[in-house]
Image 1 (tube, rainbow, N blue to C red):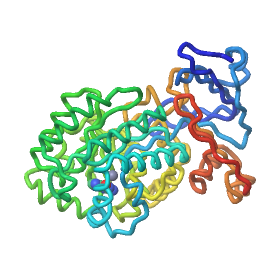
Image 2: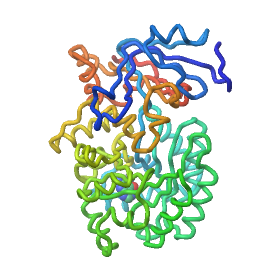
Image 3: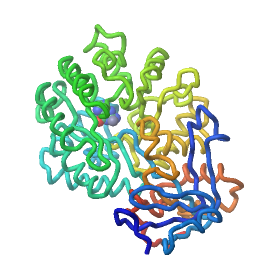
Image 4: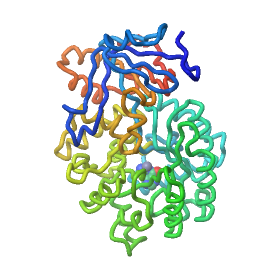
Length: 448
Ligand code: GUN
Ligand code: ZN
């Protein structure tokens, strides 16, 4: 068998491959979408070592490289990336709760109190990560809870799976249950210690995580901006302009600020590697500010529909004269599915209701390289090319009886992709490779 420098056995996949080489929204699909009907993806030491048409690459593979073959009913893709998700809310996915603030206080902030117990956090982290792999999600930007042990448990479990994960301790020093609040100083000290322990360890990255402006005092907001600036390369995540009731609350709490985004701008929380969930109600000026600062918005379509928050205007956010970095996100537990395919289904409907139906080609870009670009990680994850980290998934394009039937009438790749994002879910994920290792394999099924 072919052994590489650090001993991880080289392995290769053969089959149809879809990947992107640039921003499909800004440069168009013609020049950015790459489909190879019969390709080889070779992996070793956690990286992709070779990619190209099988006829050209096969003769160059190291001798004895095992090649796993997938037929024309399969599609090899970069692993999906989830730009904004709350792992502690796994246990409350699908809980009725009117709109955001009611749902948050009645459900999310109750469930999160259990994360004072590290063993509980570990158990939930395991369920969460397993569900991610079943859904073909290989990386995410993740909210933990206010408890540092919730971060330790999450990173320990993600590290064991070799996943590239971004995560951080939630900061909240007001307007939350007492059991979930820290203070400005405590939040700073605990986050700093977690950065020292986890940021850059293996594939893990730290994210300073002020939950949203209403649950932090101006003092904590100031601290969060300073902490982020003190640690170049770390991320910062929060929520912005999700819901009308939230907007009114922010206006009351921060009457002196120009608008919601300005509460973050004022406290130096915008810039590269800042990620804001939702952005449904951002104004033109605010979108321009996101664009000029390199701030990313995480589009959370299942959550926005579930909580009745509104429709994020993807096409407008990506407007070429002031493009905003946009990633795709589940936002569990307000989001209703781990499946990125189902999240694209909902993104399509939101775009449709906005008068700009999303094409499948753009949708698969958004779920892979687009989200990597929003996270400033497109040089490492989100596409298939030599040198990229080997997070790769294999979809079964005929995963259920109705999809199998529908595919008989499918004319081309665009239609095949659209069928997958409309009708497909976790059952379509046949295999998930993380850093070149098989991390999930769908059990045999008899239905199709
Ligand atoms: N805004 C602040 N916290 C949350 C949360 O946990 N979920 C959602 N959807 N919005 C939020
Ligand atoms: Zn959220």
